[in-house]
View 1 (tube, rainbow, N blue to C red):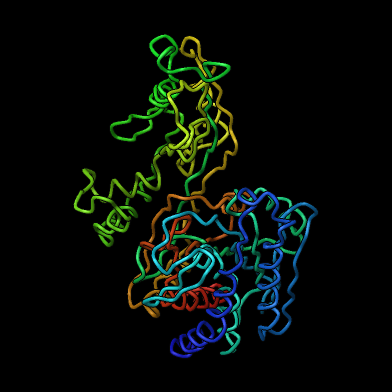
View 2 (cartoon, one colour):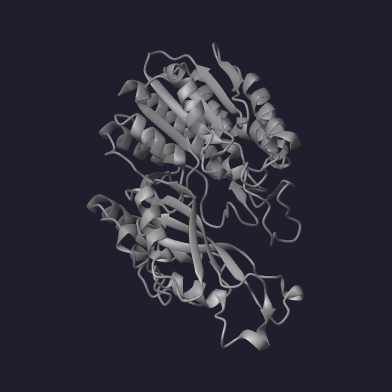
Length: 468
């Protein structure tokens, strides 16, 4: 591979084609089904997948077949098949559904309005995960431009990832024969520890989401007349959460939610901590920026990638402040999101949480925990020598820095599904979600220079995969 020619082709494609199309894509509010139950009627998902389809069809790749696959009532999948120089298969994955708008966008920035500032493309869904199909096909085109052989490639872009990929297993079953058995999976939906080198994700945490409800009354009553006799449903909720979590440290105390951290993952965390330093915590938009965590950066990385955590992400039964009178509430519901270690069995974790919260309910209280979803995590298989060498050489060629490995605190349900289905496959799980890129929150951005370099790195890995 001619590194200079690859970089020149990739950079030009990003500037002339990818960025303009991504700007149009950001304008489409194609929120994932959990956030837009009427997605089919509203038509935003259809608009987005059609836009991606048109772009794919315009790419000059001989023999390529582009198709939008549909199953009634389920979000469509964009499916691209590209013949190769061998019968070996590479599966490239991404998604085109988005998180909701959220609040707190900076002046001049909006979720559905693309803005380029300081080499960053702002707007919802550009980095998570609109660029995936563009990067995948451009990497393949970069090889074709130089006559470099590659394996047969299958590109699968789903529309349900941000809702837990509940539609995806139906498509995997439908497309199983057309996909084949990949020996390499490239996922462009992950994090990067910085924007200075190629990062490979080695693990993903699972996610258990459920609602905890405490009811004490059939209707609200005057707080002056009832408090001291009737317990507060919020106080009971608070005490129930203490069964699971040490509120002083955030450590989850339920043994069933923990798992052993493999030695190689601990070593990768140490190396990542040495490279990233204080950016591990400084990248977040703290109110008190002068504060520092008591843990080392190494421990913070393990907390974020291999240890279970709990976040309260929503509530029902609590009136808005302007409507909050002196009333003792009849009940309160909290939405709980548990991040689970990559190797923890999610159904067992869900059962353990339910037993812990529902056993021995306080007097006068009805307690219920209902699981909404329980997704397993993923721990990558041992990295083959050829892939480790390829990632290192690609990173040195296009970033002038060696590649790095680190777990990710989030979840990509597709990886667990693929890991079970194709246990012999190798995985390059990488992406553009670096410091301050803030996917899911306000001011999400795509780091354009890193997008270009990452695309070139994928091209190098595809070439090395053929030659391995």
